[in-house]
Image (cartoon, rainbow, N blue to C red; front, side, top):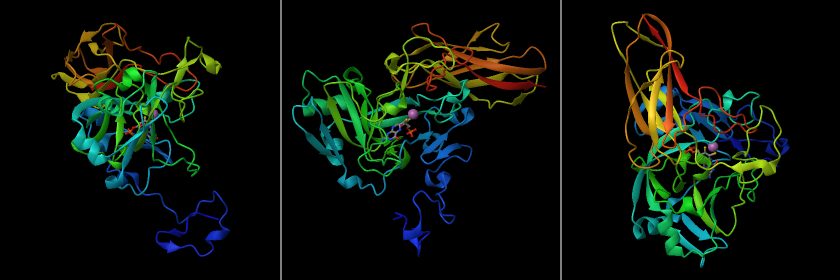
Length: 395
Ligand SMILES: Nc1nc2c(c(=O)[nH]1)N[C@H]1C(S)=C(S)[C@@H](COP(=O)(O)O)O[C@H]1N2
Ligand SMILES: [Mo]
């Protein structure tokens, strides 16, 4: 039996004859640009499930607007969300007792906080690894820094009551597994207690001062910035407080894990030698001008962009126009708050006409800098934080 009973409002007469997995010619996916209100220059990598990324110059805003935010879904977006009836349940081995909250409870019983938070997919930059790693071939656009408003997870857990043996929290959400099997979760990840209890870890109900857009987790989302964005669960209806590392979907095997030692490209790594990614590495993007800019020799070039370093702050931002022989400091702002990206800018004078590349390099507060080339190959293609560069022609 097919689950599709109609196409574009017209019923399919022989629907029961359709083999499983057969794609009807008349079936058209909705246009993601319309569906998600996307900027026309966003790039759709996949539509089932949706993976859509930005380009560097699209991320020029200090606070990323919805239309320029990458979208990464592991399953299908939940249908028919009724926010008035939405319930968030807190359960697990390490709660004093199970408790449930309506959206109205969460908004009225707890103080609200707003933070600007950088969320980057663990696989951002994967397309540059060689040999290639399976998964979405993100270039550089799977990062955003929006403003999120909600209650602190720690205030909620305090209200529930947590036992001393709590070590991890795991989220559960209402998106649907690609197989359609209601007993399978597309993704159910989490963070250790120390991350769960940070001030900036939120149960958010607003994004950029509006209800969270559907693609980004309406009506409720966990926000745990600076870690792979996969820990920031969308459409959440349950948080489990665990007495062991959370073992939900995409927590085990090689998912969101990297080798504990350096490996050579293509090397097989035993699963027990892989560890869960926590804080993301230092990185930056030149968001203005767009690569390929043409500049008159009499003018100076104003460049600008953003830089971030997971849990850490970025301490230094530099640029080079001579393929890394000399480096010059950029002006670097403080973050709006912890876990928000920082803005940089510089004025560049070019010595003569011709072709240049502008490279940007960030260094975090621990002295770790971005590598010029693609860093440590790993089986799943995570954590590529190589320097960003743009081409400039001076005429
Ligand atoms: N419920 C749920 N939460 C999820 C996902 C998902 O598929 N389902 N994808 C995760 C991954 S892998 C990423 S990178 C981010 C993407 O967030 P965005 O789509 O708001 O940019 O959401 C995370 N949270
Ligand atoms: Mo991701």
